[in-house]
Amino acid sequence: MAARDRTIETLIERLSRLPGVGPKTAERLAFHLLRVERDEALALAHAIEAVRAAVKNCSICFQLDASDPCGVCGDETRERDMLLVIEDPREVARFEDIGYRGVYHVLQGRLSPVEGVRPEDLTIAQLLQRVEQGSFREVCLATNPDLEGEGTAQLLAEKLAASGAKVTRLARGLPAGSSIAQVSSSILSDAIEGRRPLS
Ligand SMILES: [Zn+2]
Image (cartoon, rainbow, N blue to C red; front, top):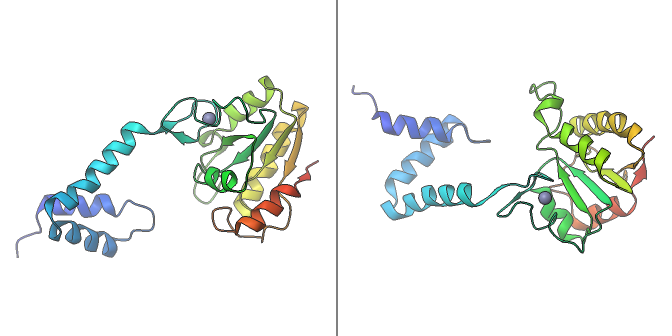
């Protein structure tokens, strides 16, 4: 039996690298892309190309935006002495939705001994430098309330202790093990309202 075309195999292999996509799903997606209209399939490729060309990491806070500095860092009306440290650029929208008016620092992940994510893989050095050079009244550690998020917050609290900034954590109202991306806006609102100092 002839082997499957190499270009199809390559597409399946590429798709299977996406988070949450196993080999079976990758195969289904690949054959779907071969079955739909050519323009429909290519629109996906073009959308990937366009977003990669337009969107970049802000050189100050590391969130994703079409401009650098991003819309938040460039906005003079924000509370520039309030810094919210988050794991993922997707979480910016959650905090914007509940009316947060300070600025952000995106870690681009969290520490994970299991997955081999080390402090140097995150934007921790840039955070420490920012806090050292800036005049933040408060640095709130808004990593997720799960094991790895708590571990990351713990390390950051230790490293920030000498900075002189008040270091806080989101309130305990966030269900343990939940994620900021998924909790309701009211719970997230309460969590930021009731943030607590970390010693
Ligand atoms: Zn920014």
